[in-house]
Length: 181
Image 1 (cartoon, rainbow, N blue to C red):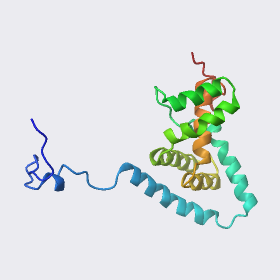
Image 2: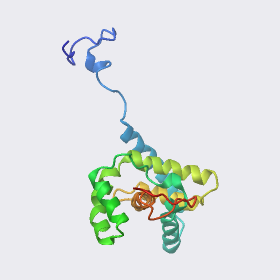
Image 3: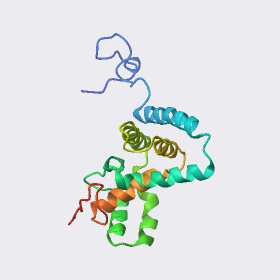
Image 4: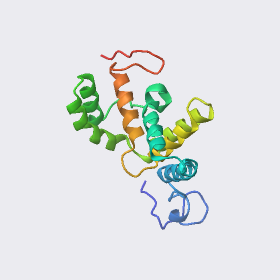
């Protein structure tokens, strides 16, 4: 059976062309929705942090970098089958080779850093702040970092921490040591 063209009547019976009915997804993509969510949250965070001094902001960002170590929900979820870029970084961490880890970090980040991951981390940060597990100002700093157009420090720390836990180089926030073979 041949594919129905965009200008043919849609199979759904709407009597519209496929391109105006079921053949074309309507609305924004998941990535666009994630970006919009993050931008809206970042505007609110910026308004709340605007009065802080530069030193206070640096303290908040330093605290933010400790979050993935303290909260498992802020470690990037790793797929069961790692892409070569992630596997290379994982081996560098397992071998305790900081030079190799630095070399493999940028390609690994390109593989995992996308709007959906950022929005997922932002939702986790907001949930922890709503439950009182983390300070609201630290959560605001994390949201601003995740909304940045460059590499997010929280994404980087989250990835490194998740990979460190996966090879047993560090413990989970609950204190468990993972042993991989």
